[in-house]
Amino acid sequence: MRSRLPGFAALAMLAAVTAAQAATPPATSYTIAMPDPSSHFFHVTARFEKVRGPFTFAVPSWTPGGYVRDEVAGNVLDFAAADGSGRALPARKTDTRTWAIDAPRDGIVEVRYRVYANERGTPYGARLNASVGHANLARLLGFAPDRLAAPARVRFEPYGDWKMATSVPPDPAGGGWYAAADYDLLVDGIVILGRFVEESFDEGGAHWRMVFSQPMDFKKNDLIKDVRALTREAAAIFGVVPFKDYLFITLIEPEAGRGGIEHRDGTSMCAAAELFDDREKYSSYLGLVAHELVHAWNVKRLRPAGIGPYQYIGETPTKNLYVAEGFTTYLGPMALVRSGAVTREEFFKSLGERMVSDRDNAGMLAKSLEEQSWDWWLESKVPFLTYRSNYTRGSLVAWKLDYEIRTATQGARGVEDVMKGLYGQIATRATGYTDAELRQAFVRWGAPGMDARLDALVGRPGALDLAVVLDDLGLEMVPDPAAPAAVYVGWRTTGTGKEFPTVDWIEPGSPAAKAGLQDRDMIVAIGGRRVAVDRLDKDLAAQAAGKEVAVSYFRDRMLMESRMTPEAPRPAKVIVRPRGDASPEAKNKLEAWLAPKAKP
Image (tube, rainbow, N blue to C red):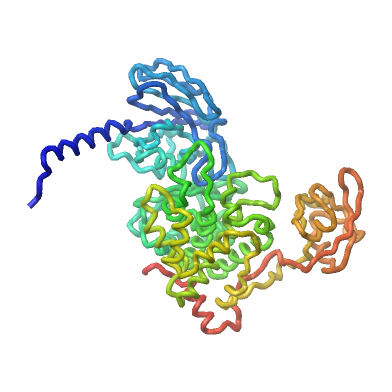
């Protein structure tokens, strides 16, 4: 028998609901038009209702997923505001990205502006041209600071006969609108417009769409088979598919372009036109797909505290971007090799490239991984500091922790269990995980003492030793004979062809640094013999480690000479492979690590 609330309780509940409805502003409505694609301008209209008093409108200073300041306001022209009858409302800029608008008489504020969008080579912002329109919606849609929690919807007006695909779900009310529960969710959407081509499939209870900005010849590659298998393995890591629809957008560039940016229910990626021409390019593209897909779990739902709810007017630093990006850089390739979409040899090649990159990263000797995560927002002039450390070193830290947890638990658990457990705890929460919760997760779902191991690996600068991990898995890392190793001198140079190489920067403590060389020095001779960019590696390969050699160079138009003692070679490329003499135990551990986890 159902009980009934007393009359006063029912009235109190009704009053509370009514008050909540009154406190929530009505939905913000946006329209995005593109009447002249060749001009590169999107036309945006934003409508706000039940406005009581002066109104504030702003545009984001950064795009979620980018974590760098990128002032959208610099691309805005013809900003104007009006009330519901079309009467102009005075609007004044109060800072570089914010406008103060006079109060409307009818409670309606309608803002109109144009946004210049002509990005090339990357998918992070927005582009509009005669062939295609694309946008991460945070690069087009401004907001009212006091209405970020209000429902929001958008309608697109494609040019001519262009098609449209977006990751924002359709509004159940119809009318060509696409709707989200709030501004954060709306601008976490992506859109592509044009005469694109599309493939799709269903897997794991979700509908997956793959859109390419221009027709592609997949040649011998079975893209749908590969990505379908990848989605199964990615979902197996976290134990759930948290969406009903997912959109992959790939923007094809005529010559070059790579990179991706994650969104809650989709990703925008950029790739060169010869994407499917050979196996290496294709496997590299699959690696990008895997990375951005894993972000749908790790970052878009499981995220560090501070990243969300988003603050669009300033930085949101966190010490845990190495988890957001680095652990994703570990889990993406793991899902990919387990799926069979890439071979183990291709997986080991990628692993070797990351290990070489980390070895050569002098920035890791200067700042800890947590420090580099926190400072991601900064544009450092220190040449050897790069935010890419969060990707590369972060992925290798994940691998080492995975190995240590597996060792401590006799293979019962690994870093994936930590991420899966933390996901179940945090993913549906409005705020992200704290530093303490991250460490607790490593103990609870990993192994005792793993919180201290995490601190040791990310809390201080230094080199990362992975020799024991390789050895215990029956792997070895050897120089790639196709890329002969030259002696180590510690300079990075620029230039082309027969030009003299110019020093870009010097690694601290290196032979070049000890010899007094510095950036902008133009190297003209080594050991009395003329050098050129296209043969510098060969000239260095002719030198002997530990033997002093003369280096001649121009500095500020003055010819100078220094004595430099090269050190032992560091292979520019390596091969990671199973050892021929690996023990049965090592082989079993390797197989347990790389074997598929998804159910057939």
